[in-house]
Each structure stands twice: as C-alpha cells, then as structure tokens.
Image 1 (cartoon, rainbow, N blue to C red):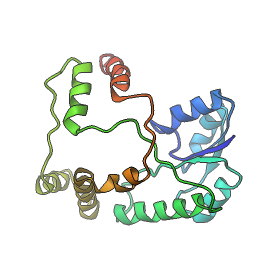
Image 2: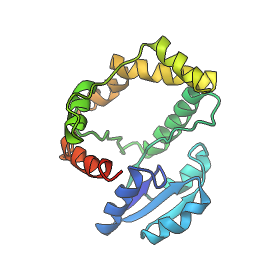
Image 3: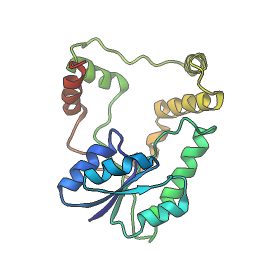
Image 4: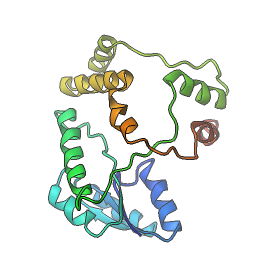
Length: 199
C-alpha cells in the first residue's frame, strides 16, 4: 500500500512510519523541515517537503495514496491558532474525500476521564496519588499570559481545553463509531515509566 503520513518525525508519526516501513508499505512522510529529509530516507520512507497549509502541495502529496494518516501539528507561530487548525482540517477533509467513495476513519484506543488516565500513569511511575488538576478558563488564561503566550494563542488554547472537557471535540468521533485499538494506556504507561525512571 501507498501510505502518506503527516506530522513529520513527531512522537506519533515517527514510530508509525517505522512500523509501516517494517511491514513493507510504501510510505511518504510530510515534513515542513527540509533538514528532516535525510532522516526520513534513512527510515526507508520518502520525504515530501512542504507545508500542510499549502493545498496544492497536499494535493500532489496525497495523489495515488491508498491511505493517509492525517494529523495537524500545532503551530505556535500562527497568530490565530483556531483559524489555522480549521483551515488545515478543511483542506485535508476536502482532499481525503476525493473521490467520494473514500472515507475518513477516526483512530482511538480507549476513553476515560482525565483522573483515570492520571491514576494509570501515576501508578506506573510509582506515584499512585497523582491527580489531574483542572484549571478554570480564567486561571488557565492568566497562567498563559504570565508565561508570555501571545494573547490570541492563549485564548485559543483556553477555548480548546473548554471544548475538550465539554465533550464537543468527541461528537464526530462518536458519530463515526470508531473501532478501538488494542494498545491501551496501561500498555503505554509501562513504556513511559521505563523512560521516566531513566531520567
């Protein structure tokens, strides 16, 4: 299969690329950083250098692909993060649904509360008392401003947190009835703990 992976060599896209290449798939990795091309080739994949905001570039990169792993990397240089995410998502959706018989599938592993996730991670690293502390929108905005995060970006991050905790971001996910993957957070927590204790 010909598979396109977005997200450059990030924490998800890099291991995903390694797995796909090891399975004999023909993989193209999209990256905006030309310095990553050599590392992408060394993994056995083909680099495609360009911006995911460039519709023409995406059109050419997605051409002939049997599948696309679409992930939007956050950009902290964008003055309006919300508009950027919306623009990129629209471009990708438009391309991924051409021709019309193609479908978008959501990828998931399991659903749980933030405190359930904190307990799994905390237990794995020897801190079973670990809790998820949810800041109010006002507290989060104040903290981001104190950290000198640009105002528009700070407001967008607060809006994203509110949407995540309201369940709004999962509406389409649930409508598409995704089949959950086999690797659960408890499995990842073991790997995370091993790296955590090395530091």
